[in-house]
Length: 299
Image (tube, rainbow, N blue to C red; front, top):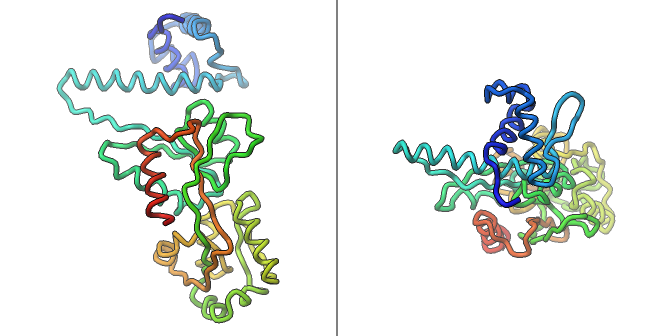
């Protein structure tokens, strides 16, 4: 392909946004066969399929999602140009797409991402929470700039990915005021037989906690397992059981949930990583996140 036909790209972009050729035809005031023919021409020029049939509808292929992201940027710039010609302010923010693994606590995710909000240039953060496998697939087709997770990318992953350690910290154990008063004095032995709320087995810290319990000969009563870090804190706040969280979030957890710390340990470490397709971090927001994490958050 020597030159991109922007009319074809516009038709593709509209079909992707509207969800069907019929709706795109209404939007563009064009017949469906005309749009179908233009889509085929664009696919032939790019050498890849952009859509695939799913039932009666069309869904983007992985390559189609990549093209759609670029098309979105192209037509956003076109709109900005129109506004500039009319003398209206633009101030178009930089798009920063982040995938957040479900096992990363939301408070940690916010602390890691917050430096991006303080950059001089306007930033539009797009956050997507999902299982790590799906996030890495989106990263591979450049639909995401980075993925935040609690473990480095597995060697079994079939994409080029580089894991950047942002930092590590110990954990603190929290409980409602009434329960904390009974457990604090004899920590960690006070956890033996105590009701405890644990993250799901997908979280790396779950395995570390279980190993630590074994080493200390502590047998807590597991009364709940959670994928959602905010939900586990809500149950802990209600007095259902003790829960553990990264020590860097201790002050925020106490303030937001009104719970008390019953003990801390550095023998269990939580680690957080930024996974990118580049060996060297380039996006200004990712650089700011990495530098702040290493110099301030986890120092």
